[in-house]
Image (cartoon, rainbow, N blue to C red):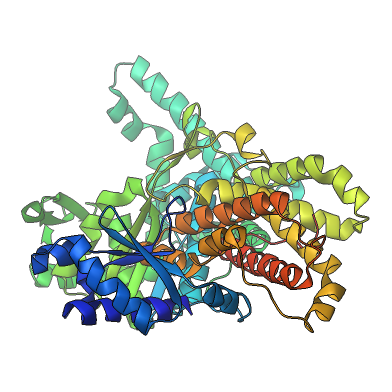
Length: 586
């Protein structure tokens, strides 16, 4: 409803002023602290027509009110034309089923996330990636786009060989089952072990007189890992068997975490399966003059003209790099899917990598290269500094999720007992509340901004938090259950027009479609997080100030119940699109 009305207003303004383009008259929702519901910005039109905003408003506003009955009043506020919706329109919106406006130009969008390495468990940084990707997938689909979620497993390379080498040297045949450890954590422990062994060897060589860089190159652990990588790339059966076994341990662990987070993908890509295509791609690049082979046998691409310097495509020993794999993956995705946009959800430490990748793909004239987009997001750091997997200073995803669930249990256990909620339902509720606290804590921050994650602060279940929004939704559901019989009887009576308290809340709710439009356009779930919290906070204040079930006048009581129900619908929608469960009881 509101979308169609806004379009009529834009057209009406253009007709009244004789303008050809609606871009000359931007229309937005009026800020909460100002009078009115919708605002027409007249400055661009005034400049174009050689008049001031007051002169334009005197022409436009009466014409709009005459042609559009849903508009009731207007005011010019500092050059902005503010419009107030009629009470009748607000009531009609409350009594009409909620619908989300679709994008008039829906697209097919590939969304790649979280693309983990198979040498360690998922950690807090991966959680930010997953929460972003999952929420964007839902927001884009709500707007009518077709989303194809895909996940790349970086399942080969020197980093994988480090865990393999450490297990081969020191594992003594131990398995995750025997150790009683989840598979991805089990493999990750050996990755950390390798780093410790390497550091000890480097420290010894430095003490003998080598500089640190040379020491790392000559350390036994480094040399044997590189040899293992060469054996893998040549197809050595023993190395390949070890690689497959350890990767399977990791996949089982990843899948358990994905299930817990409700994440699924249309297609999985594996770097190892893309690897065989690399040689052909490199040869074609050499033949076309995009790549150049150096005297030592390495292959490079010179990107100086694009300000990106020189980039190695193949090492002198013939082994590939991340950039080589990503070139092959982009080509493969273009073969697998017809898309309007392919989005990579990857941290901002890879900004340069993607600028290089997109430039190489452009020079190779890869199909769809102009449709690629890097959704860059800030790193998640601890108060003590940046997380480092090799040093074991990361916050792993699984224990963090457990910690959040336990925090929710401690905070809500007594309340749950008073509600007589069955044990299995209570356990699911603790999981939902714990995840809500974590997801909202992360998603409310604009993607490009860094997050300093303080575990103690993140488990707070009050204030601007996911659990507060969940609680507000649960309160509304209880209100609707208590008022269900009343609502059935109230259908026989009329419905009062909303007054100022209700109109202020409706004004907030009417921003839903605009919020989703902006969140989808900018790939920014933080817009939706802020809107959902603001809606919950607005209803909480309204609920404290205005009687609903205790209201004596049946027409007013019905209107307020309808409003509460609409708030509940929008909170549930916002929570689900953020990946958060909206509980019925809490």
